[in-house]
Image (cartoon, rainbow, N blue to C red):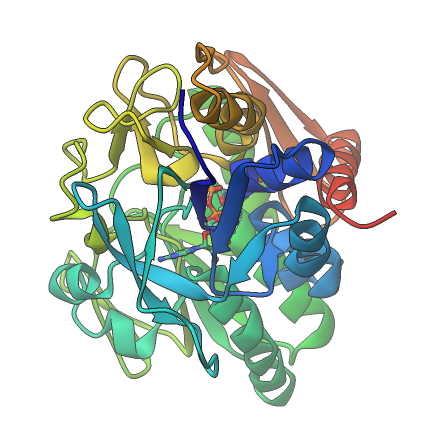
Length: 383
Ligand SMILES: Cc1cc2nc3c(=O)[nH]c(=O)nc-3n(C[C@H](O)[C@H](O)[C@H](O)COP(=O)(O)OP(=O)(O)OC[C@H]3O[C@@H](n4cnc5c(N)ncnc54)[C@H](O)[C@@H]3O)c2cc1C
C-alpha cells in the first residue's frame, strides 16, 4: 500500500489523454494529484485538418479546448513542453510554452503517462532534405501549420500558385486533395498541384485496389504524381532524386514522423525507431511506473501502424490502467484491432473507405468520416 498523495503526470493532450481527462472528471481518487504538461490551449484534431484546408471547417471546429476538460478533471495544467525525462530520478524537464511565466523547470512524478505524438525532427530533416526546414511548410506541428495556412490562401488569391505536397501517405494525399479544392475554388486560375511520393506508389502499404482508386481521383482532379524522392528544397524549387527541379511556390511537407529526440537519454526502453517501448498494458517495458500511448509509443508485443484511430482506441485501457497502477490493482491488457476503418478524404464530398482487404468510395464515405470526426470533437466539448 502507498501512503500520502501520489503524483500522476500526463505529458501531452493527445487522443488517449483526452479520454484520460474525461474519465478523471468522472472519477479521481482524492489521494491522486494529477498534472497535465502540454504546450497549446487546444488539441487540434488532425482528422479534420484537411477539412480545414479545404475550407469546410473553421480552425475552431477542428480543435478541442483543454481548459474545460482540465477544470472538470481537477487537474493542474502546466503550459509547456517536455524536453527531457530522467526515468531513474522520476523527473521531467520542462520548457515553458511561448509567453508563459512561472512554469517550473522540472516536474516529479510517481506515475508518468506519455501521449505527445510523433514529431518532425528538424535536425534530421535538414540532413535528409537540405533546405526543407527553411523553405517548406510542414504539417507538423499541426498548430503551426493551421496558423500559416491562411497565408497560402492569401498568396493563392493574388497569383496562380504551384503547390507540391511531399509525402504520399494518407495525410499527404488528403492534404493535396484539400489544397487543390480550396485553391481551385478561391484562388487565381492556373494553379498547379503535384504530389511527390518519395519513390514508391501513392499510399504505399495500402492495397493495390485502394491505390488505384486514389490515383483515379488524383488524375480526375488534375494533380500530377511524381514517384521521386525529394532530396532538398530551395527558394521556389523542390529538388528531385532524378536530378530534376520542380518549380514550386508552396512546398508542403507531409513526410513520415520521428520519435521525439528528448526520449534519447531518458533511460526508458525504446524501439529501434526511438519510440517508448510498451507492453500489452501500455506500460514501459523498462519502467513499470511509466505508460505511453499513441504515436510516441511502440507495442513490443504487437507493433501496429501509427494513426489517430489506434491512439483513440488506447484511451480507455490507458485510463483504466493509470488508476489501477495508482491503486496497486491488476492492469488490463489492451488488444488493438487487427484492422481499422480508414476513411481517406478526397476533399469535401468524396472519400475512400478501407477496412482490411475491403475498399469502396463515394459521397457516403465522406459523410461517414465527417460524422465520426464531428462526434469525436463534440464528445470532449462542454455540453
Ligand atoms: C493531415 C493529417 C491527417 C490525419 N488524418 C488522420 C485520420 O483521419 N485518421 C487517423 O487515424 N489518423 C490521421 N492522422 C494521423 C494522426 O494525426 C496521428 O496518428 C495522431 O494524431 C496521433 O495521436 P497522438 O495522440 O499520438 O498524438 P497527437 O494527436 O499528435 O497529440 C500530441 C499532443 O502532445 C502535445 N505535445 C507535443 N509535444 C509535446 C511535448 N514535448 N511536451 C508536452 N506535450 C507535447 C501536443 O501539443 C498534443 O497535444 C492524420 C495525420 C495528418 C498529418
